[in-house]
Length: 310
Image 1 (tube, one colour):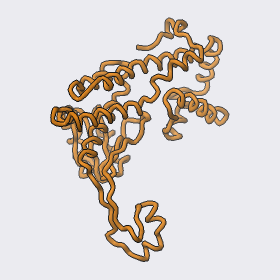
Image 2: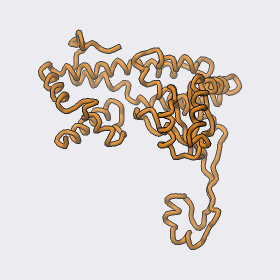
Image 3: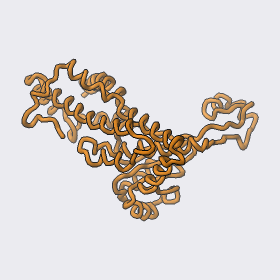
């Protein structure tokens, strides 16, 4: 594996920098899973590579034209945001683009994350929420002996033993991860887990094991709220659940932000944040066509089993 694993990752990174503007940030173990028997073991990868060479890059042609087709669907969502304003944007209509279009359905997790993050960030920023950090025990000896630590980790010093910083939320990342763990976190405390599917007891226990935050917020579909609440009460981390937010809550808050009362303030900020997050999630939707042209891939060769997926 050492003869091809690392070099193949370098080749992949060269391409992803062009097509999506970044490289994989998944764990080494997750990336190495590509070469295991449950994914693409070396013997099958070799066979696929030989077929690709014998057929003038047919496999590459198939992969990149399917990627281009998916990007076309992504552009539909991008254009929906771009043409929308506070009077015309509809949360359900936007999310339906991901639910009803097969090419985007696998991105529904990210769609929920983006809509939630944009909303939460807009409201927290509008309120100018702040966090105050101070030393309850400004021991002079500790301040002196650990002054570098205090400056680097806490942002404090002997002469500055309290600071005020803006409250902010952060998305963990833009790579697709397993459906558990942390989706967002806030520098004022809670970790946020977005669930658009059922939270089984097994998955709930995974959440408990993977999140070390004192407070957890779960965002879910209306129909899952009661089940989630019931399950979490049975588990050891029930006291850490700060709240459960449903899609109905999101609809209501979006409606308020986009109302006439806030359309010029919260509404504009919300749509701007949503557009920014979407652009960050899918940064290079225009790069694929020049890439295909440069490589000389021809969609006319894609026939039979090699048709572009819908």
